[in-house]
Amino acid sequence: MEILIPEYKIERHVRAMAHRISEEHKNSGNSLPPVLICVLNGSFLFFSDLVKDMGTDCEIDFIRPKSYHGQDNSGGVTFTKDIEVDLKGKRVYIIEDIVDTGATMIEILQRVYSRVPVDVKIVTLVHRKGNPFDVDHFCFEIGDEWVVGYGFDDNGLKRNYRNIYSIPKQSN
Image (cartoon, rainbow, N blue to C red; front, side, top):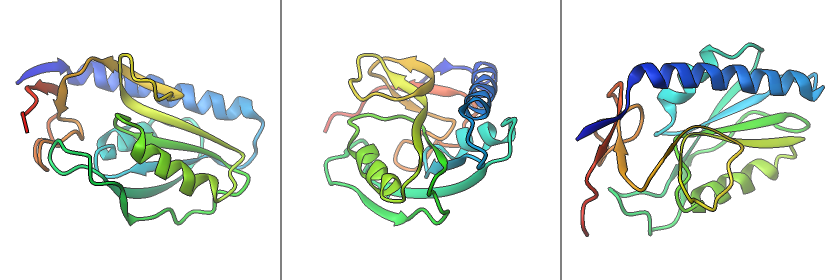
């Protein structure tokens, strides 16, 4: 296990992202506060740090899709926590740790769009180089490595690490 992204870089990039999103919302002309939706469990640390640095009032909510079992995401998507905030006419930012295949995000987007927001943006902590799934904002670009720490887990463990580490992928 080696440090891929150190804590100080995470802090700096997340703070800059919060300011970028705040300015984007202010410039949108929408007088309603934006809604930031945390995708549990992986993005909880990123989300927490991001909302603390927002330069505008915002509503927050949480959604919890389940698609991974270890490093396997072939079992489909189920939801154990759904969105509760009214999204109609509001700008929505979906805050996620990473979008890999996009299957989970597609399911989340269907739920969000069914609640008639005026605009939806996807914000991720990391984005894989060459990933065809388009996100609106991301803090870091990584390769194909498996990562842990700062919300990323390895079978439910290592989420609490302050840095992001790369670890070897397990063979199935």
